[in-house]
Image 1: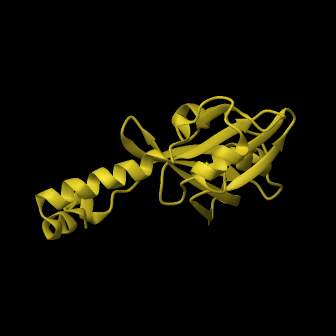
Image 2: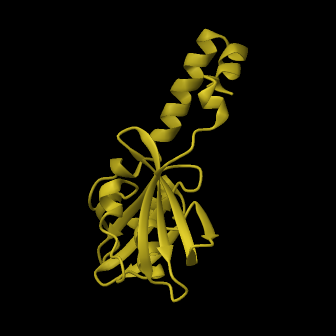
Length: 171
């Protein structure tokens, strides 16, 4: 798709389009928010969060790019509604913090948000929540197995299958 767009636009217009797309993306990058930024300013820059979770010491605003994207940003605010911390949690290290047999469905939601995919398989009685993430430039998937009571029982990692167009070199 991108190659076709590049061919239709021509070199000069293509460079301009990329620059404009890059500038548009800068306003929506949570990591660029300064500590202490008030919630109203955060939402003005990033829009409405995917989810909001109350926390003992404040509030978590969650901005998810799942299912198509590979990022989930947790913005933790203090009790006064000011930004304390920003974490992009879609990576191997964050998944390895999942508490097998101790975390619940709610714990997973508060940490990683809504999954990219929910499915079932014959060999496990429960839902499997799949999240997309990057690991050293490789597209990966984290599969969190939740039993019928909503308790995490297993965590499995796989490489994300590549679309045929990527295998053919048509980017």
